[in-house]
Length: 367
Image (cartoon, rainbow, N blue to C red; front, side, top):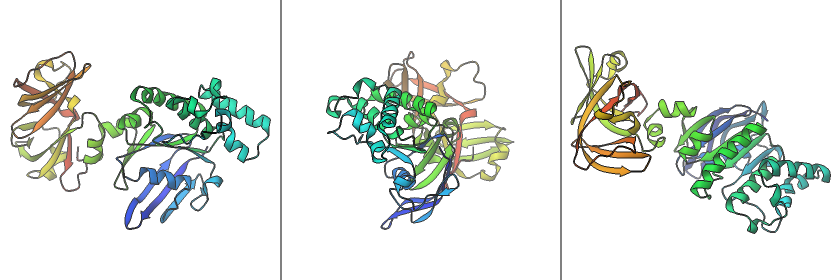
């Protein structure tokens, strides 16, 4: 196992910059997730780490060793692909054993490692089967077993669960995470699925348009997004965004959104003093808003927005209500046990401790 360091990595395909000056430090034994939309550069970054792509600029370090120009076979990395990539003409045992045979390991050592990996992935009873006799989840386990059997320094996973059905994805998420904790291998996992990222990653590196937007723990990414992109990409339903002008009246800060004003009191006066009379972007997560009549006693520091219920999504455990304030729609997430009617007037309480304010020009976070 090793720590991995990317230093100012740039990768271009023609005139397209796929990875734009990324610097990233990954700790020994850490499970880090590269999260972002399709085309953001996360898979290209993974392939640079694997040695499948050569960066146009920058360095890749495994510990103190510069591996930038080394081919994959000299990096001691293993990769699990979205397509499983198991060989259909080989039995499960031979699929797992294949990378060990290439290294000309003794048969007894190969057998020991194959059975160790199969037991870890709970596929020992499948060793004599062919891939066409397996389910999608079982084939994915075979691919993971083949990846860990060589005891790699770095395990790379490129959207390995995207071809599985929803229920199996949930199960495999927890199993992969538990497996990584047991073998303690440095793992870099690529996904566009924020739920996978939040549930599996020790830290998450959010990418967009080839750039690193933010890196932090799942809690940091969710509660303290660095910019509008991260705030909007992480969280379901998506964070509510609207523009507002900052006003200051008698040491009280107001967010004037036109349809309504949010009284922030005096707690943010110093933070927002340089933005008075300027337009900012305000962000509020749906779960940090609640109808006034459902407001818990513990919620003290609040502001209220009035509106009319425009749409209701009854999802069982949760209910999503869309509140029309006049010129915008705010989405509010509440418990599914509560019912609201279309056209109903509501007053929505906002938890001011959870409000986000971003600069309009750079879209970076102020609060």
